[in-house]
Image (tube, rainbow, N blue to C red; front, top):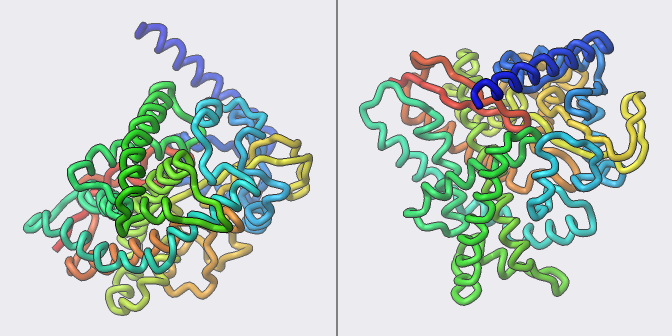
Length: 421
């Protein structure tokens, strides 16, 4: 078995290298988002894509990769020509078949289904309900750092960036503290479902987590129908628009989406953001001197190293993008990380500038699928920065270099040791 696996891995590696060489010869650039150098720093590749082949066909992943801001902005706003429905895709990309087996969330639905679901959940996930969480988020952030009392070096991800959004979304949903560990395991596994490339083992974990979380939420939903509380499940159960309500299955899928997407995005915002500030000490010093810049800093950090690097669309019909013909049913990868560094949209895009006047990052999307949890992610990001700066006079890199996880859609750190004083 070991020999067979080794042979299969070698053949796969040769195949990947051959297809990438073909891409490079054809267009002057190759795109393989799981390459170690790309995982560590994707931005040089994004620059080559924008300059040499901004609508780039990847034979390896059977999709077009779009890298310029103007093209992404147009596609994200145009749901009539570019669909979110995975069932429309002609691609045979590894995990796509597995993802189609999950009950679809509004993330992968088009109008009119998306319109109805978004309208209902908007009534439950209101700015007011998010704003009410500020004191709890701040107390939770302080509580996590209280556990580190006396520590001069720790893993920011494990101790702070990962648990903070997990605890917050669990509180919003109404999950008891005793279930937080299970909740986090489900969250991590379901977040992998957002990735276009999964191993068979990861697919099994996604399906198992989906079943277990559905069973868990079914019990909570039935309880909230009988005894409503001031939590997100109760508001989803009670949400009504034009005489319609979410079904139990729709509520379960909505909770799955909020858990997987919201958790990971905020974790990555905190980790990527603090790393960017440590690599730009003048910006960190400015933020300490002018703490009122924190909201603007959050926007710049979202742009500079986006928590979500890719979004997906499917061409409904034959269409043209940037002068390239794209056939109906073709998958399109929207390189958000690249768009946020497009010099045609941002001055000095590769510089971190928390006073940047030309804000307008595309990190939470555009159009009807603009991220529902964006206000919560911004709030948590702002509070996380404020609390870290309040608690520590000095923050620097720890002994172990930070390392990014090998993901395609989500960009976040596996570990990030910091030294504080």
